[in-house]
Structure formats: structure tokens, C-alpha cells
Figure 1: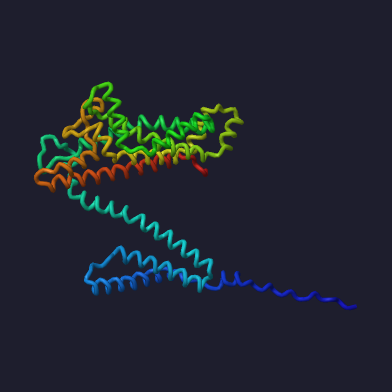
Figure 2: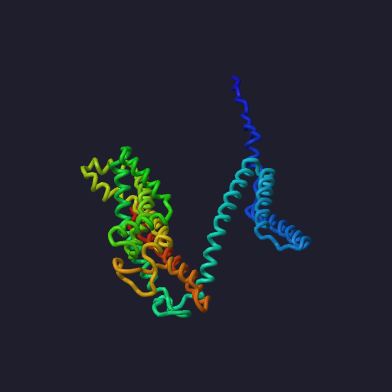
Amino acid sequence: MTIATAPAQTPPTPSADTSRLTSGHLPKWGSWAILGLSTVVSGLLFAVFSVAGGTEFSIAGWAVVSVLAYLVLITVISSLVEGRRKGVDRLVVGIVSAAFALAMVPLISVAWTVVTNGVAGISAEFFTSSMRNVVGEGGGALHAIVGTLLITLAAAVVSIPIGLFTAIYLIEYGQDRRLAQGIRFLVDVMTGIPSIVAGLFAFALFALFFGPGIRMGIMGSVALAVLMIPVVVRSSEEMLRLVPNELREAAYALGVPKWLTIVKVVLPTSIAGITTGIMLSISRVIGETAPLLLTAGITASMNYDLFNGRMATLPVFAYTQFMNQGIPAQAYIDRAWAAALTLIVIVMALNLLARLIAKIFSPKLGR
């Protein structure tokens, strides 16, 4: 009896596309080497052109040509070695990285300029004294720091509850009703209004009751609250929208009323994003100058009362110090840069505080 043997199966031949996907791979340092080569070659070319033409070396042009040369080289070399798909992928990665570097240039430039110029005006006296009876050198911005914190705190007290409750209504109760649609439209309009309009609104509102020429810290708080409310509404609305409906339905199935579900389930789940949005709104208004110049004004003395008299703020203090320079002028310029640096530090501290609050109150995912 003969036993038929099955023919041996030959492994499938890889297709051309599969072989190109695994044909080769650039080393990890390959991209950096190509970038360095592009930078050096373009730098030499610009140096030769600048010497030949008697012009200055163009740093911006050198950077642009280096990036373009890198994108062309990395795409061609990667396509030849790794295949067309990987070459296109490296091209897109290069474009995204170049866009990120371009976006970081003004941020780093502004931070470096403020720090280098603001350090000259930083001193113990700057944080412990005001400008009362000070002409020329000396004095400080304690009155402006206190005014900024008080006005911003009052604006937050007014705007955060209004913005948060509005967002809760839009997501939990309003949904697609006409009132909710109208509120969303008005919030979108308010998001784009210039800050000076908010200042004029607050000035006109208080002028109706107290007469023209009135200046108070609470007026600045109202102006900043008008700018903060749409940002709080929009950011809180998006965070509440991300909460899964399954969490709400699970609470309703247990007999929990809707208001308690919002307080115990919806808000704790989205607290991290809501806090970030609130801090974004505070950062957006804390550096406003025009509305505070119209409403709170400027003073050289300490003022802790939001409802009585003018109140200095850091943005207006920096503006007046730079625009109304006395003798010596450098003292006024140093105080202006120091106020700008202090304002940036305050915003950074508020953002760190927001991250800490979000970390503490956010729901724990593990046990």
C-alpha cells in the first residue's frame, strides 16, 4: 500500500510593498546627523554670501534654509532607504517639529527679555513699599501687587459662579432648547469683544449711579468679570460635555436626584478641566491694561478698599512707569520691567496652584 505524501508548502513570497516596509532603517542618530549637515552647509553658504555682499549674517534666513534643506534631505534619504511611506512620515514629523520650534521662538524671546530686563528692578524695597512720595529712584510696587490680587480675586468671585452655573444649565438642563442656543450665541459674541469695550461698559454702568469721573477697584473687577465669564462658560461646558452619560445614568438608577448627581458625580469627574479653564480665564484678564486704566485708575498709595478710591494694578503701574518717565529715566524703566516680571511670576504661581488643586480633587482611577 502506498501512502501519498502531501506536497511541501512553500512559504509565500513577500510582496514588493512588504519588502519595502522592512527593507532598511535609518539609525537613531540619522535624523540628527542630517539636521546637523543641513545646518552646517546652509550656515557656510550664508556666511559666504554675507562676506561677498558685505551684509550681516541673516540668522532668520539661515534657520529657514536649514529647515527646508533638512525636510528635503530626510524625505529623500528615508524614501530611498526605508520606503516611501516612512519617508512621508518623517516629512510630516519634521514639519510638525519645525512648527513647534517656530511657536516656541516668541515665547522664549518674551520670557528671556522680561527676565533679563526685570531683574534689574527687583529688590526688597520693590515688594515692601509703594510709590507714595517717591520721585526718581526708589519706591516699589506693593500697592500695585495688592491691587492686582484684590481686583482679580473679586472678578473671580463674580465670574466663576456665573460661568460655572451657566455651563451646568447648558449641558444638564438646556441641551438643545432655544434659550440654550441663544446663550451659546451670546457667549461666543462676548468671547470676541475687545477688552476696552468691557472697561467702557463698567465705567458707564458705575457712572450712571455715582456720576462721571468715578474710579474704584470694584469697577475694574466688573470689567474683568465681563471678560472672564465667556471663557469660564466655554471651558466648563466642554469639560462637562466629556463626562460619560453612563455615570449619570448609573446615579439615576440608584435613585440619586439630578442636582446631587451633578454635585457628586459630574463636577468631581470634570474638576481638573474646569480648574484649568478657570485659571486660563484668570491668566487672560490679569494682564489687561485698558479696562483697568479706565475703571480703577492709578494711585501711588496703598488702597485695600475696592469700593473707595482709585486702586493701582501691575499692568497699569508698568504702563505709567514706562510712559511717564522722570529723572533718572532708567529707574522708571526698571520698575516697569520688574512689574512685568512680577506679573508673569504671579500667573505662573496661579497655574501651579491650579494643577495642584486639580490633582487633589480629581477622581482617583486606581486603588
